[in-house]
Length: 127
Image (tube, rainbow, N blue to C red; front, side):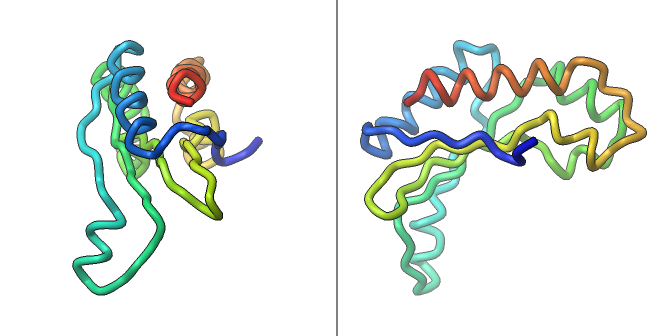
């Protein structure tokens, strides 16, 4: 099982970020924050290609996983990265189905698979 789900897109980066925002809302999740990593690093004198981290959350799902194991909070909120590399734009998200590998005692049932499907859907519909 891959750690991430990553696709490429022909859309410009900012258009992809807007699409991720819209698809996140459509999926019943909420965008908590968008980190402009490029701008943050530039303030410190470091230059990188355009890179944004979009933090998303669904309160009910977050509550459920935190009840199972509070340390899962280390993986929250879910993040979708939008970045450019070698002239291509990528959309990438961590696969929630891997949580059981890090937290084997947490009984998440089918929740991690359900959230994984939602995040992959957000990514696919945003490209």
